[in-house]
Image 1 (tube, helix red, strand yellow):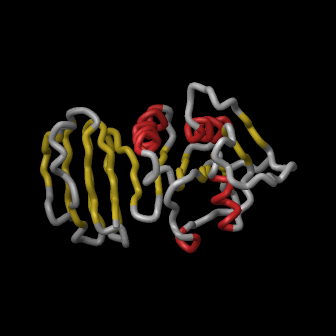
Image 2 (cartoon, one colour):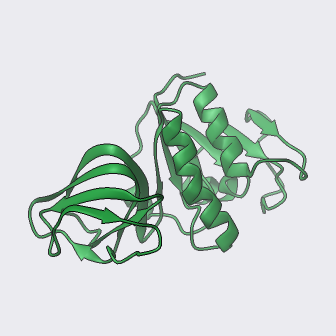
Image 3 (tube, helix red, strand yellow):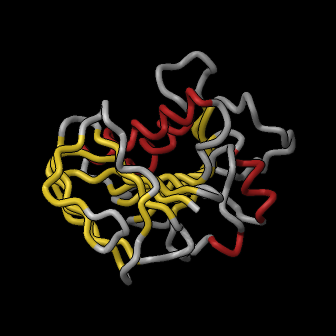
Length: 206
C-alpha cells in the first residue's frame, strides 16, 4: 500500500469540479460511504472504502478494493472514521471533499471536527464547489487571492485577530463566537495575511 502524507477523503455532498482537483500520484484516497459513488463518477479508484455503506448507490463494489466496514450503529460518522484511517496510514494533511451542503448535522459535525484534527497535528480542510473551510490556531496564514472571492472568520472561543490585505482590515481585534461580524471580507492585495491568537474557523467562498 502506498505511503503518503496527504489523504483525500471523498464524501457525499457538493464536490469541486474534476478539473479543480489537484490530485497527486502519492495521495491516499479514501471513499467514505457514498463517496464511493462520487469516486466512480469521477473515474477515480479509491485506495480504501470505509463506513457502513448505508448510502452507497452502487451495488457492484469492486471486491478487490480494501475496505473497513462498520455497523450502522456506531459512535463516529463515516467521515470521522475515514479521517482516523487516514491518520493511521500516516497522513499529516487531510482534504475532505464534499461534506457540506447536505444534511446540516453532518455539515456541522465535519466543520467542528477540524478542531479535533488540528489538536492532533493534522492540517485539514473541507472543500466543495463553493467553499473551503479550515481552522487556524495561534498562527499566521497567508491566503493568495483566488477564485474564492470571500473570506470570513468565525471564532471558536474568544480570540484576537489581525487581517491585512483585505477590504476590511482588522488590527488586534477580539473576535467572539457570539459576534460573527467578520463575514464576506474580500482580498484586495495579492494575498491576505491573517494572524490569529486563539482558534478561528476560516471560510473562503465563491
